[in-house]
Length: 137
Length: 135
Image (cartoon, rainbow over the protein chains, first blue to last red):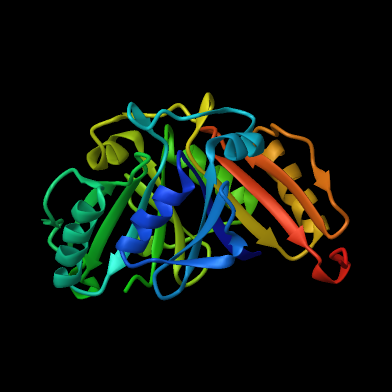
């Protein structure tokens, strides 16, 4: 049914957000966005598309006020890492780039290892290593 | 490197939301589904997770936003035809979703949208690149 899915997020400053995600090791598709009001973030090796829009542009799509992410959240993105070491490396990069980690990477439910961070706009991301061999049956 | 993405959305009533999304046509992955969360499969690497408020709250110290009042994210999907967009929006409406904007027909692109039972917004589109205006 679904051919493609992409995520649209509001950001206060497109350029600062591009710098932030670049420091985390993500790429941008310069064919889309590229102006001052949007950017096309590509996450991971499958290149999941996250369109970053400045707030006036984003608001024109939704017809509602933008959530004040300092107070509340509507969404959490979880992306996987291939090892615990990769999770730890990412946690260091996030802090260096100006993101906020709510806690150090930790074991979760015995089969996952990860942490949650907030980006420059308060969007929450969960970096997670999952050992599917240890998932409880 | 990242190979999977899960978009986690908080929902007030997991069963009702699962019923809603089943009607709209999403498939559930039982391996990642329990009484606190339901995993809907977009493809082999993309998933939308519906989490109970209680479960979602484990990941954030902040309040859960009322998505009927404000928006933090817009999930966009591209489907195979204009008719499919029309059908999905009609199905979502019949299942209790909210249609908050008019459809937009740009000739080469047809767009419409719905909000789910909790106000999470989805944008649906069909693009026919053969009709894309030539420069």
